[in-house]
Structure formats: C-alpha cells, structure tokens
Length: 293
Ligand code: ADP
Ligand code: MG
Image (cartoon, rainbow, N blue to C red; front, side):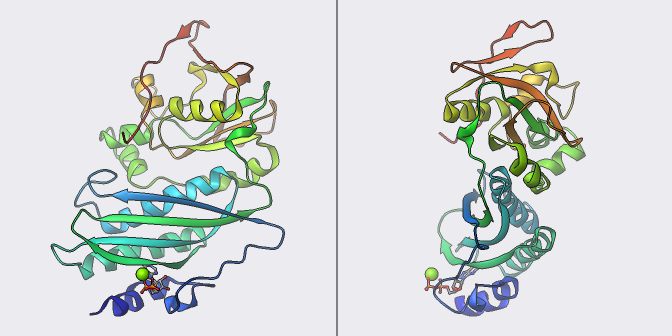
C-alpha cells in the first residue's frame, strides 16, 4: 500500500470540516466570528514520553489530550487537530498498530467533539514519534501573565496522580498517567473569573514558578491546602512530579467554586514563592520539576 493509500484508508475517515478529505495541500480553518484562533502543539517520543509496547490507542489519546489540556488552560474550546507521525522504518510501518492508533483518535474525537484537519506521515530510522497540534478558539484567552497581587491561587483536581501513576502506585493513578483528562470542563469558569491560568504538566512547584515569573508576582502557598492524589504519600514528590494535566489559575478570592477546584494560596508582590506548612513555617523545596535537559 502506498503512503497515499494509507492516508486515505486510516486518516481520511477521521477528517472533518476544513480538511478537504485529506486530498489537498492544506486545511482551511475558520474560527467562529469574533473569536481568536488558539493553537498548541506537543510531541510524544517513544522511550521519552511513553514506554515501548504501550497500547497504540492510549498513545494516540495521550498525544491528543496533552494538547487539549493546553487549550483548556487558555480557556479555549478545541475544534480540530493535525497529526504528524514518524513511523520506524524497521520493523516496517505496521498496519495493525496504525489501526489501533486511529481507534484511539476516533474515541477521543467523539469524547471531545473534535476532528482531524491534516498532517504528515513519514518514516524514521529513530524511534516512533507523534506530534499533534490542536486548534481551538475563544473570545479572550487567559494568559500566564495576568495574575494580580491579592488574587487567590486555585488548582483543579488532585496533584500527584501523574507522578504516582508513572511509578505504579495504584491502578487509579496509573490510569491517570496513561490517560489524563483535559480540564475542558473548566473553560467557562476560567472565562468568567481567571486572571491567569496554565496547565500543570511539569509539577505544581515548577509550573507555579512559570506563572509567577510571567505575571511578575510572588505567591504564598499553604502546603496543607494542596489536594493530593494520596495524602499518605510524600507531599513534595507529588507536587514536583508532573503529568498532572490539572489547571493552576488565579482569580479573585470568594468566587463560587465547583467541587473539583481548591484554593491553595494567594498572589503577593515581589517575586518570591513561599511554601508554608501547617504552622506557617517556611518550607524550602529544593526539587524543581520535570525538564528534558
Ligand atoms: P504534501 O506532500 O503536500 O505535504 P502529503 O502528501 O504529506 O502532502 O499529505 C497529503 C494530505 O494528507 C494532506 O492533506 C495532509 O494533511 C494529509 N495527511 C498526511 N498524513 C497525515 C496524517 N498522519 N494525519 C492526517 N492527515 C495526514
Ligand atoms: Mg508531506
């Protein structure tokens, strides 16, 4: 089967509006009138982001979901994505693998009401690599840089499930690591209240540092307020671990919160981040978070 037959057999059935049935050079994107186009891209490489032998449908869904998480963090509603696949030339590109990969995409297209817009299919002498770019829209994205002194800091969900899942802590956390759930359910809340937001992919400690730096502010965090995936497990490991795909955001105090959102501290002037224990004592966190190099 030729490259073009592969594209038509496996990918064209996933294509939607603007994709021109994957028979043209480019796709056409028209965000809703008065909305801005919001774009995010992420690559997953075998052995770096997932283990060799991981189920192909799970790889596809994770590759898609980490991008949807970035759009959710900007309070943008996703509508489509492009897919760049680099398939190892040895052993030769495997139809069974691609079939199952596409089943994963199809399931999440239905879950998140999105469709395929285009992509590229190539072979490589290196490991399997998947790059997805997700497209969404909103009237006004929430940036990392908008936090104001006096804002409260909030997180969604529980922190540490990704880290614990990577280390096979339990079935539930393993599932969270393999298949995070992008917080698209928070888009409306963020649109209404958030002054700054980001998704937590590299650990709460490191990512809060990025948000504060972008906003040129500091923060005081009550460690005991942070909702942990496992309260009996080391707190510092869980808040520096990464792969949470929860949302960290700032908003005025006293907003009405859904059950999945917790206040963990507030924004201060200056640029230092203070982590405080139950006795208001400073805790020095030496670990950073995940970095590739
Ligand atoms: P070109 O040679 O112009 O770059 P390609 O031959 O790479 O085009 O691709 C032909 C069409 O198939 C394009 O519409 C492209 O978006 C689509 N396509 C190729 N690979 C994929 C893929 N992995 N997923 C989705 N669409 C793809
Ligand atoms: Mg091409």
